[in-house]
Length: 313
Image 1 (spheres, rainbow, N blue to C red):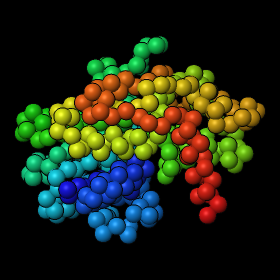
Image 2 (image 1 turned 180 degrees about the vertical axis):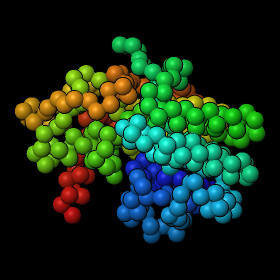
Image 3 (image 1 turned 180 degrees about the horizontal axis):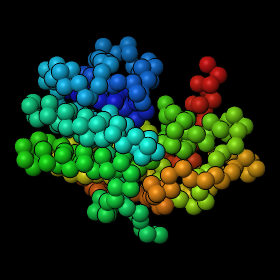
């Protein structure tokens, strides 16, 4: 198939592109490199089925030209993704995540290209203790990032119902693994491992009792690709995660064995914090046959080794 991946040189995008190429698809990547890096695709560039365009989803002329390639699927990952930045600079997040999504949707509509929208678990309201979050759980726009993603979801659903465009909305929970940045708030596992390897202090925002459901990136990429391939997912919202949560305190202790290098610091934007995140992925298992394969302990060890190897290159 001909498949467009926006944001394809980013952390998750790079793994999605790799997985698509393994199935002999022809893959086009569109990325403005604000979050991604061309080097993330270095070990894939020799594949003749990969085409990379550096450009912006707000450039409608460029999108129109790209969509002349008659894409079967568009996997839309491109977005401003940092919650704290969205609070500080909401216009940028709105223009990239809402207007940009609309632009890509409009092109997909013209060619009836299946549209896979990357949303986020950050759209959910907090869960009560002991309960996992299903797709029916209430949403809450606690940050402009979450608000923009919910707006994007609503636009995607409207194109499914109004125009019959095949769409699927995916809400992966926190994802970690090789090629993730070790800066910014999105990569708590990456940041902690990098700090530990450097012998630095691991800073925890707030009291550290907030929990996260952490999914290994190759499991996430497999989920996204299966959602793209499957007609059964069309019109649906689908969660993916490990199905288990861990407190940030316990995560730090798992990564760093020296308790003296673990500190608590004041939260920068406590109003956007979600106290508990744990995924109910039973719908994705039922609809797609997907489930995660990598335990947190196993994933952290693989990721730590990758970070060691890349640091020593």
